[in-house]
Length: 397
Figure (cartoon, rainbow, N blue to C red):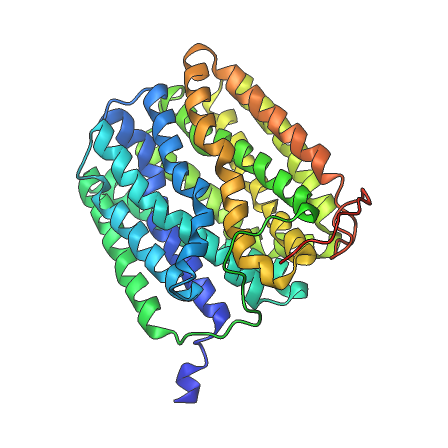
């Protein structure tokens, strides 16, 4: 019996969550622009509103602390996964503006709570020396799941003519079955540190908060407008988008563990510097690209550079009090989504006048991130959070 249970470890719990989340969410994501344009007649204005609605639960991620008063973090993760899968399953049933906003909100609530708890558990359960490598492995597992999802979408819709409604329903139902298995199969794992069950904001974490804010702002350019450009400007079909995503995740699957090891070796400061320099160039390229092939190359490189965001998480793990991690994960997701709530709407309006301006604004976000990343010490730790030696008054827990 012990041999059978040897796989029921915290690491495998996290890896299984990392597998099923993109297996379901990736179907929602890859179909969204085509579904919104072809079935719901969305323009840049409506897609901007939808993406802002999608980010509201991320903005409210700090409220996960309230659930921790009642449930263990592990249970909250499973509940969130179930909610996300239900949201995906019903999306195709309502190809109209307001209902699509509602199903998006349901899906996104589960998604963001799951991501918040997943980040918290990962940073709590793993040794600091191994976390970057493990996060790279998580990225590889996510990529493998996304590959299955995108390949399935391409096969069903391009080869067998399956409609949007059925594809969404199958994705959500499949994810729900795996979610129920994860919930029932794993034991409840003990946590090394009792987590604070209140909001934690510490002055000494200011650089992490700032990096997180600009990451959220920058991410909207990729998530919302880069993909929308592929469909609107270059007439990419569902099959084209699926193949593009497949290429993205093949790179992540193959390079994820290597990127994680590399970050662990060179440090967060150098890794984030390379990421942000690359994103400045890529967003500037988006602004002026006129060939579909060149846009696709930029899109793949964009996705690859975002893989280096692992470094922000490991930076926080090194400077944080272990008891702050659960609460701070919720707070960081909220900070990450402050810009994400209003930027899609504002940029959606700008998009109608100038697509170039949207991507150049993205470049400015990446420049801000680069300047902040240069303040990370070569060896960050508690008491040495930034290169600026600012002494804050003692903070109460």
